Length: 184
Image (tube, rainbow, N blue to C red; front, side, top):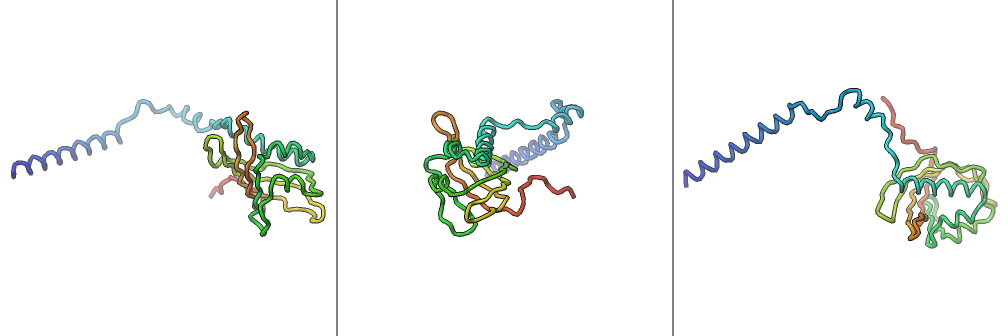
């Protein structure tokens, strides 16, 4: 029994020593696959290409904005899923259906721009995007509407490959969203 414990103890110590050696060796060995300094700069400055899904959904967001300015509710309707819902985080209004949105009286926009866009989650045929829009718009009986909105959109891919907006959660923003970080 004493010999068994001594053997196990020696095995553990040997394993620990070998593990420590390999760990320290891997940290100090110069890697041959490292890029030369000039290539490292090149790699850092490469702009990552956007995915096909990102381009398609950003295109739909921009098409929606352009259609609002043009007063083209037929295009807006085509972009919307039949079960579309708009939920405003401000106020206590109930969700707005596709029919309610398309039927809002006296809605007009002289400009609408997607000011930021980022895919938040991609789950096959369902994608969630964070969007901010800056608009110059008004509604009859209400007047000028707030210019900046922070939006979470959920998109669904149809069988024909086109994307339709299924839901939009909208919040008034004080200013356009920017992803720029403060450089201190």
